[in-house]
Image 1 (tube, rainbow, N blue to C red):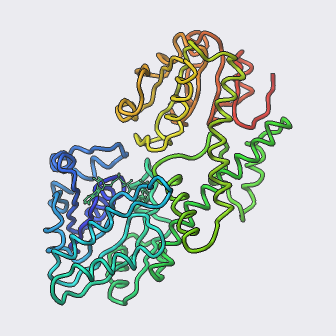
Image 2 (spheres, rainbow, N blue to C red):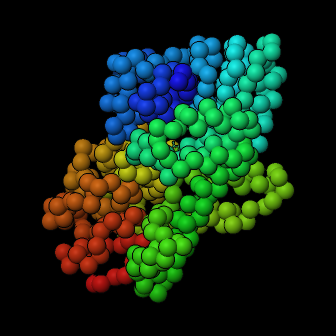
Image 3 (spheres, rainbow, N blue to C red):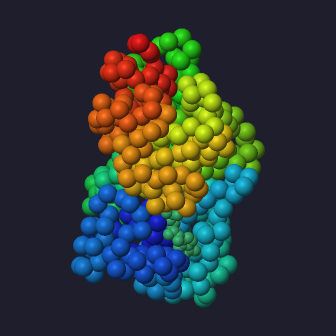
Length: 433
Ligand code: NAD
């Protein structure tokens, strides 16, 4: 099929490369001309395992093309996905400027039937606005459909998630739109949920909000564990074996971050409010998540007493492992808070240092975890990268000023570290020493 994807970020680029890999002819459009210039050369502006290779292969096979104007996409592709960013406004509502802009430009340039698909995460009823926008700006009597096809991929494993999804959600209001999308996704052999547009839009917000709820729930239980000396890892394991609950998203820690959960939760709370329903549950989920960072900072203060002029080593910047994405990463807030108290901060991350240079001042970026440890008063774990799980702790102990590890992601075994002479502080776990 001839398809276009507007927006070549984490979602658009992965979607474009994967659809090309499945044999479609794909045009990826982005209004960032520098990004398009890079992509044309096969350079990838983000870190996503396997993406560079997939883009290179499909560029070579001429199934993938990068351009900066929507015109060609609207003229030549029957299906046009919108995958631009949908950030939060200051009041928590979704900024839909990008979606409107793209819808208008498609309308102005399309000359034949087109299926315009929302891939970006948007509040319920955005599809109806996209339809109205296209109707307003369309030239002549061109037929079109709007559909919702929310994306569920996770950064760091995006290609695998796209190629092997748990399900594909397709929200349509015509048979033709449904058939086009069902055919496009057929090669994935995935369960399909074909529904109406509003339900599809709601599925995405409800999913992210539910997952955030699981995280805040386990974090709240972890606080009780801290209070009574129980172990959250064992509590979560015991809970997760119940098939109705499942093990996923029951990792206690400093809470969720990233470009999706915080903004999607805000957006869901706001759209609910607008529709006349005050979503108290999600307000509490958000509050608990905020408190986790403060709790972590308190653990650092309790251990170090005075923060001023102390050197603190930090492992991890990205909001989760296997990505360079630092949008809404807890690391940034925590590092800034420590700096405000007068700490000197050394930090290492396997892939997010370049992005973090723009967000952080006065930080010493290190080449590895051991350089972070050298001369630091304590070691903080903020992102659970695999390479942090396999450190040489004898070396870590020698390099640190005092053997103190404060782990915001519960990645180490308390028993082992305590036996080695570390003071090991984590989130809601039993102490052995
Ligand atoms: P992103 O910021 O990485 O990418 C968005 C891209 O759109 C950028 O390259 C930007 O230059 C481009 N763009 C913006 N306005 C444009 C316009 N008018 N015309 C052409 N290009 C334009 O964002 P992302 O992380 O890929 O997210 C995109 C959407 O997908 C969001 O709604 C997000 O909530 C949703 N989503 C993201 C993820 C994820 O893990 N990142 C997962 C599922 C859904």
